[in-house]
Image (cartoon, rainbow, N blue to C red):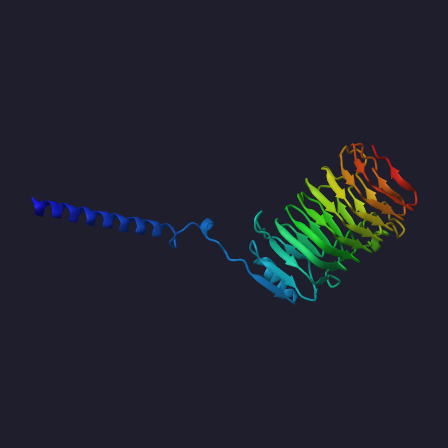
Length: 297
């Protein structure tokens, strides 16, 4: 009887350890080489670039969390496209330096952002034949302390579905489209076909040939807060409004809070025929050629 009990106990122990071993093997198989790609984490990397080829390589292979630092001035020979996307919790970062676009072909944008979830910070974009930087299609991009100057159209433009872009403490100056007598080059343009939820905060538009801000034809509400538009409107055809807040045939309720318009060629704030209820709070200015407010409903 005792032998039978010992045998039974020994058998139970062997079965127990056998089961434990099977569980461990089963767990290990889940994270093996056949694991789904969605479960694989790609480590972020930090890259400093000093040449155009290195910059293009870095942005074309960028993954969420990557940091691309531009050192010095890089002379672009064609539009730089930011086409890849980060994620809501891990954006792609590009920062620093100057992008000189004077060697690009006629009609080229300096930088085109088609991707989403980028942080674009602390850089200068200048001398593009057309717009300095354009956001379209994608969204959820954050732009901080970026200067766009001496470009052949608007310094920074959002259109063609670009949405949920947050532009903060940026500077746009001396943009001028010579071929049109200054008719199109705004400091900031969020117009024609931009998407929803675009915000400008603490930005400055100074001495651009057309308007400081241009929301012509923009179908969705734009928020502009704590911004300054000054000395805009030069050349033979520049309109020269500090803040152009829509266009005829529209009824879009833009939000304009705590802004300043001063010394612009035409109006400080012009609804431009937009019959939407534009909310202007705490905004003022002085020295504008035609006055402070026009066609604000």
